[in-house]
Image (cartoon, rainbow, N blue to C red; front, side):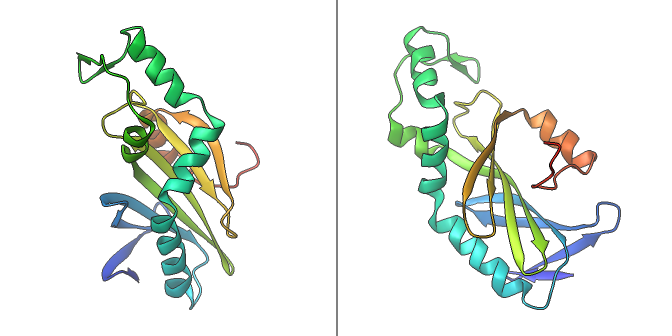
Length: 172
């Protein structure tokens, strides 16, 4: 059993991971831990969690820099093509509104000897990404990588079911 921020993460033998929920970016987020967990895990993991909280905007900015989603969404609004919850959206969104809409749906922490990597799936509320999630990978030295631009929620569930959430697989 792992204890993080006063929550106990129980080990799932079938999945070979610890799983629980933590508040990340002010939202309850499904969190998975797997790999070789050493005696310093709590201190190292807390460092990663603090970094993740403090670097919300740089992570989102990296996505905006590498993807044209913000402009594409506003183009769809301008063309009267965007619907959220079966309602047409008629007013363009600001970059500030777009950035404030992001949350983390799922985050995986992989323990690799003395390093911890982060693999997260971000969504938006309102659902500007139209049911898609952005996969962000963060290396042990805090480099932010956009691994997949859009991942459907059903693919996240399939990846979990097939145990494909190892963040640094060469086949991806």
